[in-house]
Length: 271
Ligand SMILES: Nc1ncnc2c1ncn2[C@@H]1O[C@H](COP(=O)(O)OP(=O)(O)OP(=O)(O)O)[C@@H](O)[C@H]1O
Image (cartoon, rainbow, N blue to C red; front, side, top):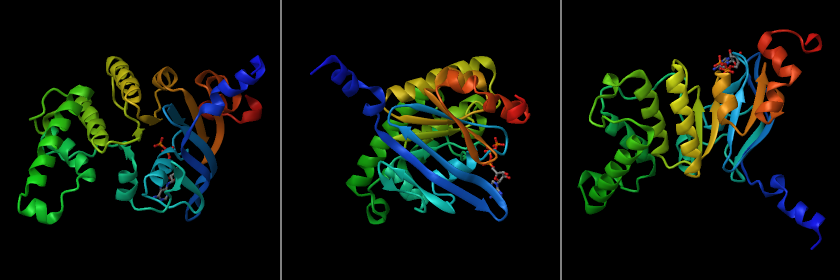
């Protein structure tokens, strides 16, 4: 094989394996076009940032990917399989987990119980087995409990027995991540995980996101904090008014005049 042929074979882009494909998705709410022909691919093992000004369509995109909304046009595929239009729990079972912009924990349950609820998405215990406390029920219960402890340690929540509502704001956000990880996702979607964080908390979140990726989980991140986005993502997709206006490496996106204009609120041709 010549050197040129070797270069072609080892070309990184050729080796990338698509995990999630958003294929020309349009989503309308009455007269509002929340997503307008949005098209991008998320590759296995990467951390992709989804950014854009308020109302750009980022959360709607997450909602379309996780079964909350069905696209008006286009489709979304996960590991090659069409998922747009599927029920939320089916999409969770296929391996997509998410956190929400606003914390959605069970406040009167302990941190550990909140994580164990997340793991339930994968339990095989039937209603009969659970009702009669058959051996399979206890096996899954014990494994789920051990795994929940591990996940809490992994995200840095050190009080498993504390009620969720008594945890600090930062711990609650981390607990949400642990609960999402309890479903053993291949893809984790984080919707503004650093909202309300101070700089030190943002730094440790950045480390946690990298640690999650290092365990083999692909990450899609919606985040307004540019330092965090630039510091942790491999690539970035930018939305504005429901349309994709840029895609590329963090440095490319940062220097893109259309992106600068979108954030500064000036027309592109004036940038
Ligand atoms: N259920 C809905 N019904 C009607 N319009 C909606 C609905 N959900 C979102 N929209 C509209 O779709 C557009 C995109 O909203 P979306 O929440 O996805 O933006 P975003 O980029 O996540 O914004 P933010 O950064 O403020 O969270 C907005 O104009 C919003 O008002």
